[in-house]
Image 1: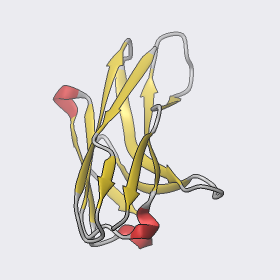
Image 2: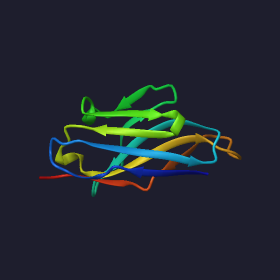
Image 3: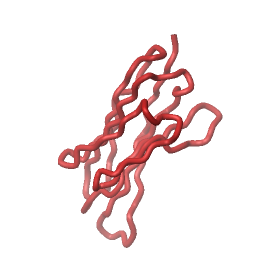
Image 4: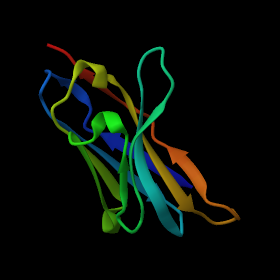
Length: 121
């Protein structure tokens, strides 16, 4: 019922910047939280940043001061501005959306297909 389309990944040198976008579409009543997770090769998926419908944000310690999450509720889109990128930021980044949808009593979680971010010289 919710489709997520991510964009903005790629190859960047250490110290560089990238901006990820994730647009939600489909049939839903409302979107609650939106966020970004990442999964590096051989590691578990981990939270990078999240933002509530009211605009409250939370960040993993390893990105504080470097990454900024924002959302455009009118466009059902969440962004992740990534600055001062490090090689250890290399991972597949996944968009995560929690939404209220028809025929579901509880909120439902959706995942994007993932976008590769590679930080290397």
